[in-house]
Structure formats: structure tokens, C-alpha cells
Image (spheres, rainbow, N blue to C red):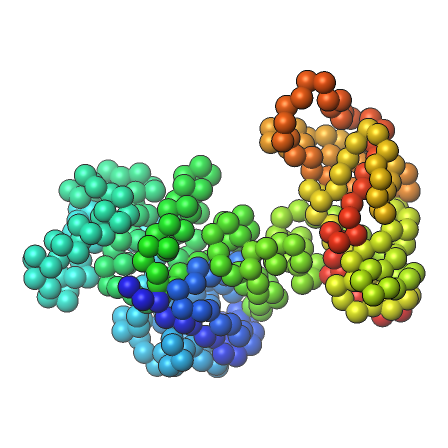
Length: 365
């Protein structure tokens, strides 16, 4: 199978007075695993349905391989959609569910059997061919839905929160299977989710949406490490947000002062001037914590106000001497009995590299 590139040009969509999509522009490369990520009501499912042909834009265009498909109905587009509820035929077996579209095409029984068996092997459902959907687990039903969609040999596979109905462990397993399946079939996957962990774990690129607009497009690494604004910083993972004023500007770094923290340095990823008011983001896992003084440009003293042990890491909430409460994650790489474990009310020292804090808002001074 060979995927198509997908391009969205200036798409608007209204439902009555409500604008669901506002001048959306997007380019998805052939064969990518691309995710549309955002909270409920942000427009991601509406955009997916427009790509599928289940909704039509009020303005703008949708192109597959550079050719407009807006006027082409859903059943004629080279795209198939997998929904949250699987949409399987309950009275048909696994084999017949997968074969359904092939029978509509009047393929021979030998061709149908050969193709269905190949798809059953692809999604690892060997031995389940004669079962009805009710006899399958949630993960197995989802794999049937995927195989049925692939039977049409689509160039674009659209997935609308396909693992949301499954428990956490099964979601992770099916995500890995989807990622492996994508590598095998090579078509374009467009995946809709509100779960940032899902999106950044399997995607080549992610578009973060809010209020009908795309606020940032990038690799998972870029989205997480260098968020474009406050919304992306807080929606993708957890972070520390710091309001500060610029007191000095150099080529790579700036010096700022923040209420509750004091003075420290951060990376100059946006153009700023002395006197500007800025908002910074700093991920909790980037901060080091110890009961002993730490060397570093940004070093502070504080007291642990709360600790939350999570097995693989501990979350600390540290009140610094100036009053700011800093969220810190300490990873448990080794289990050392002779290492002093940091607890509630302990005095601690914290530090972080200036490269790890990023500017998400600027208000000119």
C-alpha cells in the first residue's frame, strides 16, 4: 500500500453561529503518522471528518496528493475511518466483517480469502476468524476494525480516538501495535486524540489544536521541549510557569527577575529587550534536587512542602526561600539503600540549566 500526502488550505467550518474551524492550514507528508491533538471541542474530530468527506468545509480546500477532494463523496475518497466504537457488524464473523467491502466489489472468493487471511495475520487475529464481535476483547475488536479499513487499500487511514474505550494497559499495547502496523503498511495515518501521551509516543508530527485553530505543529520532541505558547506548555505534560522581567540580554541568554524566585538566567529563544515582561516554562524533570548544595547558574534553596512517590519517580513541591513553589520530578534510576531519601519538610537545594527554560509569552516593556 502507498500513502497520500494530505493538505488542508484555509478551512473554515461553522455549525450555526459556532465556528468549529478557523482558517486551518496543514500539510501532512505521504506515509506519515500524524496526530491531531487537543482538548474536547477544539475542532480535531471536525477536521478529521472533513478529510474523510463526512463533513464539508464552508470555505477552503482539502487535497490528496495535490488534487482537491472536496467535491468527492466519502465513499469515493481513498480514505477510511476507524471510529471509537469500532462500528463492526455484530451478526457477522471476524472474517465476514473484514470481507464485507471486498464482496461489494464483487471480488472472487479466492481473492477475498487470500486478502482477508493476509490482513488477519497482519493484525494478529489468527484463530479468531469465526468469532462474532461480542466474543472478542476490546483490543481484538479494534484490530478487526483496522483490518476491515485496510481491506479497501486506502491511501489515508483516519483514526478517531480509536483506543479511548480501552483500559490504560491495553491502550499502550494497541498504540504500539498501531505504530508497528503503520511501519508495515506504509500508508498515511491521521490520528485524533485528546491524550498528549498517546500523540507524542507514536507520531512523526503533531498538530496541537485549540478553539478551532492550530497553535503549533512539530515533532513530538519540538512540541514537548519547546512549546509555542502557554496553552501548549500546559496541555503537553506538566510544567512550571514563571512570570519574570528581563533585566539583561546577551547573545544566547537573558537574565530575568521573578517574584517568588529572584534573579536567574534562561535561554533566549525569542527576541526580547530589557524591561520586557515574559512568561517562562520549565519542565519538572529538568530540575535537580538534593539535600546538599548544588553548583549551577540557577541555584536556589527551599523546603519540601509535598512529596508524591510514584514508583519510577517522586514528585516534589518545593517552596523556595522567596516563596515560589517549584514542581520537581526526581527519577529513580537506581535503588541505593545508602542514599538519603528526600522527604516532606526537608531543606533542599535545586538547580536547572538555563537552556531548559523557554519563553512562551512576551509583553514589551
